[in-house]
Length: 259
Image (cartoon, helix red, strand yellow):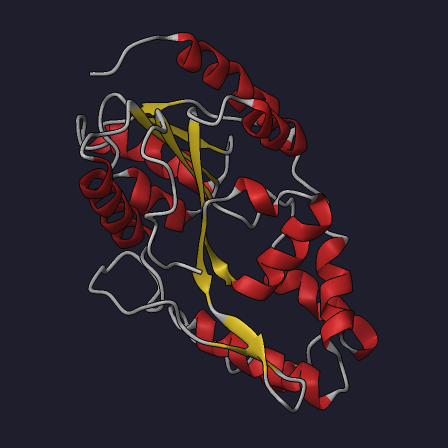
């Protein structure tokens, strides 16, 4: 899913990254999957196995437990499909879908997993909008268990050991600029969590970070501006609804000319 991107045309003016949990959908898919289990809760002994920074490994145990309880692929897909979108998000996705094809290259990066994300996007009719989806790979094995693997390993002290979104953003932008032979006019990042702050740090002064208002990403940007002025370079546009993002993007796409 995160393979070679040469089939993406090189004329895109803008690159926009999205997080998934609590950005595109209004809940955390890892929490929602519990609704597929008998009694809709996890036993205490399983919750107690969680260790900070090792959430991915914990979720692997949760998925194994669900399989033992007889939870099927269609059970999991069904609870994922029912997660509501965040306010105004379907409007934002529709806006991106109806723009001229040379406007936006759209990429999703999430510490959830590919099965949860694909299930929701397909149900929402939004899968085709995303040129790339970077997430922890998850597939069902022959025993009907959803097996999830870590996305990668990295050296960032800020992020959980299975995913640093800044590494993904930097690598993707560098590779695409090489393939395109020119930079994007602007790069955008729409997110909410602490692990969305890290990639947004790599944005430049022409780029725009869209943190969900009063969520951890927004708070971390505000704190960084106060503690280390100049460290966070992107323009910051907080959002409560996807329509706030549409409003700003409308203005920016109306600007003409490359740099």
